[in-house]
Image (spheres, one colour):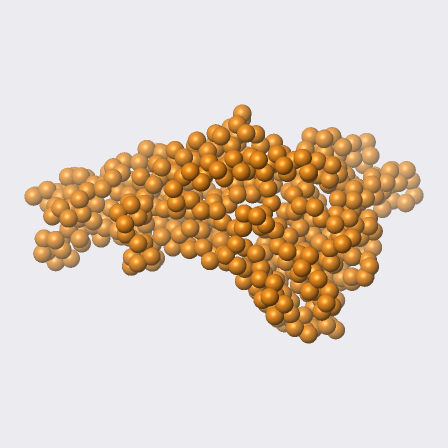
Length: 129
Length: 403
């Protein structure tokens, strides 16, 4: 598989790897994918009182483009409001990383991950998902 | 030590320099067509082809007249399987038997025959990758015309008990084909005693050139085939097409070297493989795929749990290895061989095949081990599965959202 320089950069120097306390009420956690399919992404957002995402963390089991998609996503969501984060599309991720066609599902998974993280955060705060 | 380190000898091997040297004159000085009977150019090419035929026959305990040149093991398998099924299927019946862990070059011809109206039994393997002889015996029917089972598996390196399988085939009068592409120079083959009717070979897995192979066709008792390639009637009608003397000379020399050196070479490679195995055993949650005893010396197939194979391959780009992960292939299915062993999809995705060879050194192995220790740890730090496993969560009990 030949990857773009951006995928390789994110893969070799992944941004924001790690975990927040899942029970912290300011943290939203999204876990998507399945080991049997070869990729599992865990994305966490830490949201401030103003609804702005202050920080993000990820852990990913998967191929190079799955790791790069989640790493890029953590960079993109920081500083965005929760609503803005919900508008990130997989096509934007795929385009930014120049993912080959067989790897588009990795960007889809990243979009699912942010949606799941926001849903978890909203659930904790009694907001409609 | 030169980077990257080649540890993919089961995919292909470099042509041994001693082999290349023998091949070159047949590209220019001795360019004749071995089928030319009317002049010296043809005669010398023919002599070279016949010498190589004897060299190949010699390695496997066959008569040179039992060797048919082909373009490689894929063609040999096609000729053997379709050729024998078409010839014997008319009288004996249209039932064929093979194993789920065979190479695609056996599975696909079988599937094609299925499409043509044959019935195929696809045997399971046990957890160690070996077939169950009792299950095999039960699969044989009065209609069985042909059985095809490989000697050495290309992914996990296990050695099937072909002497026992062949004996059962003889008892029932069933033609027995063996794909031995991965076996030459790795295990001793003596067709004087092995009850095998057809055997496929490839040069490039044994330090010969790509694009040349052979099919062994037993003469006593005589095995018949329907040709798959029609033309000038070369190779006694089994396989038409002008022979490639430079390739053939290369295969002959490569097999002669394998015969002369395999005993000492396998001992050396086994020591290196054991060193690799000992080192990898020190990494937590690491599993060997396939039987460790009934296995060729140069193969080690290992699953690193909680780490995905393709990303591991990216991380260890100084090592040329292959993976059972779907992500390294065009399909999205992980290795069907590992799944046939009953390995979970997750462990199949996490597998790496290391195959060592003639030019692998101890230094190479030590470098590979230190790189693997470091990168597996890095990827596990990044893996949500590893985090969950460390927290004592049973991953099999988690409800995953399959996609």
